[in-house]
Image 1 (cartoon, helix red, strand yellow):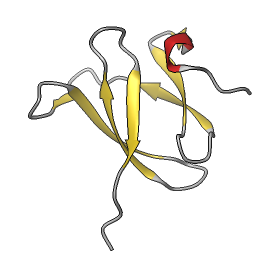
Image 2 (cartoon, one colour):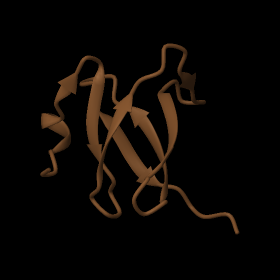
Image 3 (cartoon, one colour):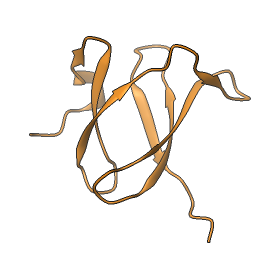
Image 4 (spheres, one colour):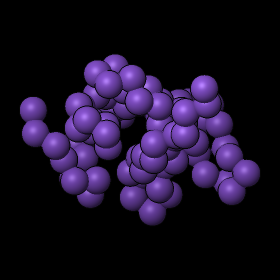
Amino acid sequence: MSSFPSSEIPLIHGTQIVACPKCNAQFEFRRSIRPHIDECGFEAYDLRCVTCSALFHGIVDPADNALLLSEAERQD
């Protein structure tokens, strides 16, 4: 499966195919019916890549509903 640019993420019955920013593995992401809203007012998610186990924080961009991911800092 190839990687999709965030502007071309296909929607499959409410599911988005997203790529891990660290290893590029792809997985399905489905938005919650009752999402967590962060202190800035964004719909926020914490995710873990099933391939490389990296932890990510994500927010949903309200302009285009794309999931924007950033790698979380490890707390050892």
